[in-house]
Length: 456
Image (cartoon, rainbow, N blue to C red; front, top):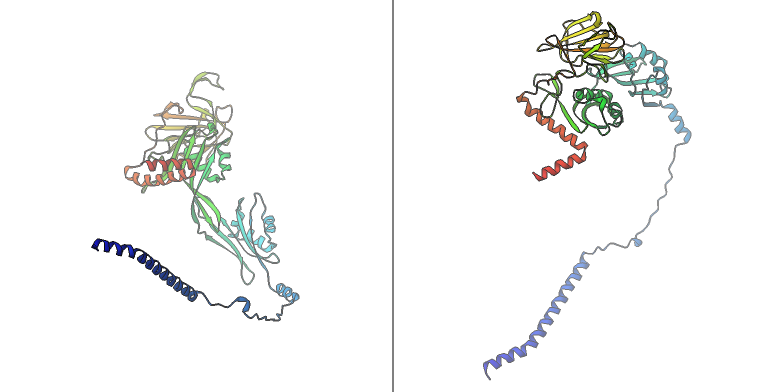
């Protein structure tokens, strides 16, 4: 037999044998594997008893409860004390307020009126929160409220308390306030002040915003769709806003034009509002020394209403009610104050570079105004009247350059000095933070910022 035939026979004959042996081995190994797994599963499974086979044991115990009468007697024997808070209403009398808050204590009411410190509580303002603690008969144990004498004065806590002997005492302690930074947006629908009220912006903050943009925004010509955003300080105590502080930044959209400004204090200098590129927001001169008024007579030739003669009117007349505050148009020094013939009660302020301004027909001068006194822009120097040659209450305002009258409505009101170069980097960082806050108030602007950031 040829070797090749022998080899083929072995291969041919061994194919079935080899195949049979391989299947047998695989089946054997698999059976062994599953047997081991089954044994392991039995070994791992918990051998806990069936819950139904566990014994159940019941315990019964008698509990003694105190009688209801004993509990009532204990409560009656214990002195009850109550703490209440209430908001003082406008024009509310002290006695009425104490009664409403649960204080039935004539001695306490008299103490508040007579004690030098406690009398500070009589400086109540609407929306002021007062906290009291009384016993079950209404006797005052302590009373606490906050008092502030002005925006630049420290806030104080006035506390009235009754000691162990029953004597009432008072204390006046400077309050430790928490400073917060708040943001708000107001949309113009009818006018400036209603928009601020709708946005729940405090009046002190509203007045600051108005002053901030008064050289750029004509508040008498606002239109629906205008808006303003602000970032301002507020100070809190025990969850109550005690006062508001400075407007840190603001922006005003008027007729599609956006004005932005931030408060900044130069190193060792006086603070002021600057546009986001570092220019002073304050103009050298106010356009009008009276807020929200109208021009009744311009700078021109006219027939004088009293003399009947044709002559030049070298100023601008602003019609306003008697008593309307008159503001200094710019920083300067009082050059003269007093009656002056046809001008009536007159104040003249000397500024820089030969500029001066005159304010005539005042009903009276502001308290303390005198010759040589320094004044700042917007300081009240007097009040509208009709003294001198006048047919009705108004302000006659003159703007002079080297004692020559100029039309204040057309003269170039130059801007105040911009920030120094050395301060710009610090200011830019602060302005950038304020601008980011404004963007957060308007999601569409924030989305645009993000889109531009991705593109860059």
